Length: 505
Image 1 (cartoon, helix red, strand yellow):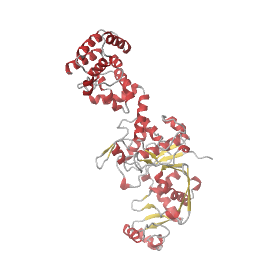
Image 2 (cartoon, one colour; image 1 turned 30 degrees about the horizontal axis):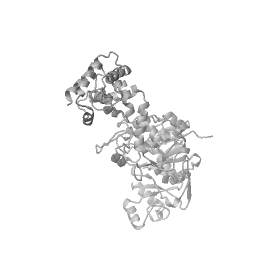
Image 3 (cartoon, rainbow, N blue to C red; image 1 turned 120 degrees about the vertical axis):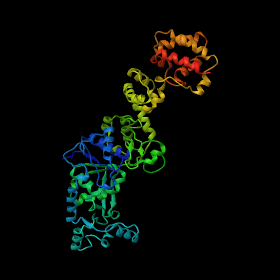
Image 4 (cartoon, rainbow, N blue to C red; image 1 turned 180 degrees about the horizontal axis):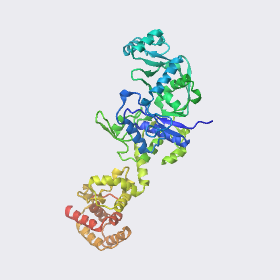
């Protein structure tokens, strides 16, 4: 019987969720939904020293903002809980005992000083079959000595016993069969008595098995740990339920070589976190995609195409469309350059395809901060509709649409020099008379009347229209001039021309 697809995203609450982690969560979600499966959010908080207050809440809020739905988790509940590893101590303790009883693991009492001495004595030291025999552990100490040390409260770790010189095969859905010899693996620590918690390696294997995870989808950086996880599944006798492994390509720096880091974002001016992060220790604030004005659907679309393609040239895809097209057959093995400029392009495309009223609703809070009040929803919506094709972010409207909401107090110097001539004030006075005579200020009607007046008087069309625009807008920019004057009250248009006449030389 074919297993139901069940995937898990298992972040640690040690700080903000990196955009690479967001992509991993997204691919888990897309694969699960494409195959009628479930998405689990499991919190890996076994490293109590690195726990950061607020990080877990941040993870949940980020995934919710992006529309990455969770079927089972700390907040959602589910039949396989608890979903926080710190609440699963008894489960891990039981499985540690199982490995010890089967001779698949052993107890080690080596102090940090003893381990440092071993590293100094042996170049490239690793705790394995060639070195464990001279260390302080339950393989070298008498059983009564081991019991005495434990009874006295001596701190210890439990290490996995790796058998030497064995080829371990990992079947990866992107990379195919990966073979790694066990000689390069050390006897990993699975459990620490100091905090009565397992390490990542044991906790993940036990949780993935008990939560019936069918596919482990994670970043490429975890590939070296995959052979160990295969061996642990074998040690527990769980080979029939071993999940399929999928190791995603890395997100690479936009410039140069190496993995994408926060420093790259700081240097080039783009976020590497989905939401703004306030560090509780230092008070430092890191930029987030949400706060910088990115739409969640644009971020999802952008991230989905970093390391995957739909098999055709389609670029703009909704979440539902991504789900329908997603498969690991079109995932790349090599890393994906993080083209942050492409991210801004996606945001531009989603904004211009969004209804004007929705963009206007996003813009209104920014208007209120500027003190631009007293405008109807219809006025704001029409103004936004005229200029939204020029923006990448809603905040760009503060510059692109400002003249709809405030009269210019300054005029672009280069435009004044080029467009405001000696006879311009006289012509603008005449234009005021023309505008006052127009009852129907719709764009087409006003344009015909004004252009006929220009032609009849033999005026230079470009000079008159650019001076007109300069007076109303403050510079020679913006949408079609008569679309502006159709929306703006005629009294406001005339007042602006009068102000320009009085202000400009």
